[in-house]
Length: 292
Image (cartoon, rainbow, N blue to C red; front, side, top):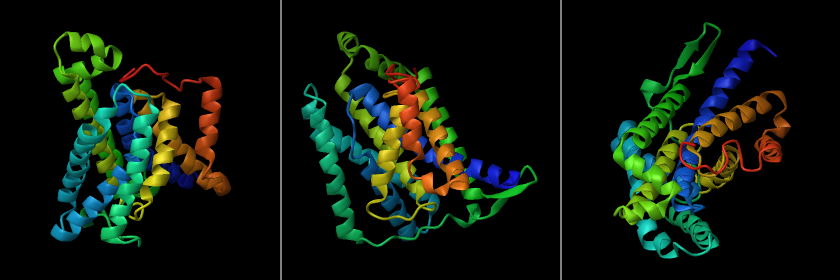
């Protein structure tokens, strides 16, 4: 096996891992504050892809689609939290889990009604549709490098927001002691609403970024949802740092297994999860919450 092939696969795994990171960040930030396991997250990923495809088809502008997708899924997430999830707060965790599980299939059927069941082709913009020479030994698609760069930028912005802003401080405090935050006169309902929308927006931007790499079809979010939950569990439920590290690990594991032993590519992330949970049952960073 050549060094070039391994290096290319490592970068391929990093680009896949970045999609896992975006989805896992959305799941983790929602669970970390709301303690809601959002099973409709995969469908929001799919809606982000379709919103982007529709926008790009109508306007011919990929960059506009990149903005519209998270706005659509974020706004939808705000509606879901206020109208459907909020009445279930304080009940058993299974209630919002079952609600979002059913909502996922409603969202899939809506897409089937309007767009059908066939795959939609979606290409990267011309400005990002060329190979880039790396280290003088191989060429790599510029669009995948763009995905890596955008995800890294989003992670940095999210970290700065949570660490350096007053709202971020409230969110982090709310994950640890929501009763104390309420006692300080802060309306946690508005914070929950905002965080659910932000997590949904992250799923949307992951969807449009994945569209040129993976075909766009109604069930595209189902497999990604399962894989993203594996990433979240391995990283530690509610831990953003764990979501980032675990997403990269899982992407690399999948890519390298595809290169060396393709028959195991579909199950390797589950094997990694089993090993991690045997050693650390709470995941890499436990259940310590946001940025812990």
